[in-house]
Image (spheres, rainbow, N blue to C red):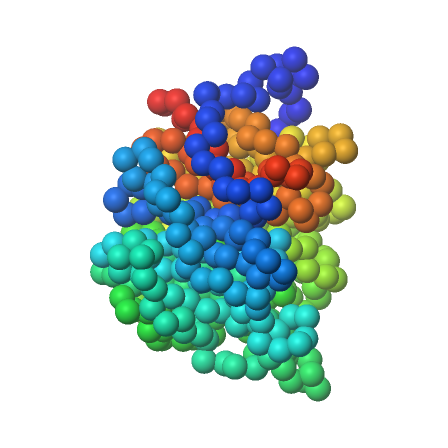
Amino acid sequence: MIRLLPLVLLLGILSGAPQNSDFRAPPGSGEPFLSATPRGGLLATWFEPREGERRALRIAARTGGRWSAPVTVAERDNFFVNWADFPSGIETADGRWVVHWLEKTAAKSYAYHIRLAVSSDQGKSWSEPVTVHGDRSATEHGFVAMLARTGGGADLVWLDGRQTADTAAKGAMALFGGTVDRNGRVTAEARIDGRVCDCCQTALARTSDGLIALYRDRSEQEVRDISAVRQVNGRWSEPVKVASDGWVYRACPVNGPAVAAAGRQVAVAWFTGADGTPRVKLARSQDAGASFSGPIQIDDGNPLGRTDVELLPDGSALVTWLEIVGDQAEWRVKRVGADGRMVERWAVGSAPRTRQAGFARTALAGGDLFVAWTASGSEGGVRITRLAVTEP
């Protein structure tokens, strides 16, 4: 258990190393995503409002310390726009941009499919969108995690509701995976786990042994702890629990895990409400996710979760989460050494204690941590903050 720090000390270290506002999207923008590129830059996606129900999915790149002018990936009035299930973009090993989003497919509240497009000219033009999954049922398909493949193209996992279409059988949400080739064609679709939590984010990382996917599992007894599966010799392993929280919850907490990997090191951050006490935890693996150490508590006593995590070369982990502060909340980052000790911490920005805060997403570039989040208010919108991480 981590002791709470005295208030004076806490206020003194919350600022951490210097931080800067690096990027601002227009008022009303939201649902940001951030990823590191193979060439040491960043790629950001977000939604901007247009007339009526229309939205524009926008993208920009950061190279050489500067952000490019944003361009539009797609503009629709049938996007499925959700505070927790948002588009993402990555750059592949051969420099292509791959972006996914969600589109409504029926009048039902939760009937939407995963769509994907590729650009080979840094957003000037885009391929014809494709549907990621072979299933076309009017059910939920989303919560995508996507990762560039070393030889070009991408790997991805997602939550797939095709089994829920059989209402008589009361089918469960499932975790599926697949690959995207360099031209945007999706292949090798496979069911990874046939019963998972309905609406928590998935996470994907690459170790020196292969892919590892993290997600919130769901037992027949409604235990909703975090599980990991690994891709070994082209096949997905059986799930391994990251920790035995024993959180029994008869609804979806909409609070998935985050993962980062380097070599055979893996760091996983997640939220749990086990025993009626909200916590953000961090666990590590030294064997590419085959097993995990006992978790440590990261939060400051009253978290809402919504985690992200990055690994630094010295083995320390940067964990981001949303912490309740009075009648508001605050995005916080804590740097935890390989020995479990707190090294640095930052307060990134304030947010409401509601869904309006959305999720913050992080990425490393040039030795700094970048945090994409949504500022509230009439002039609020997507912000990207740069945190200068000190040398070990």
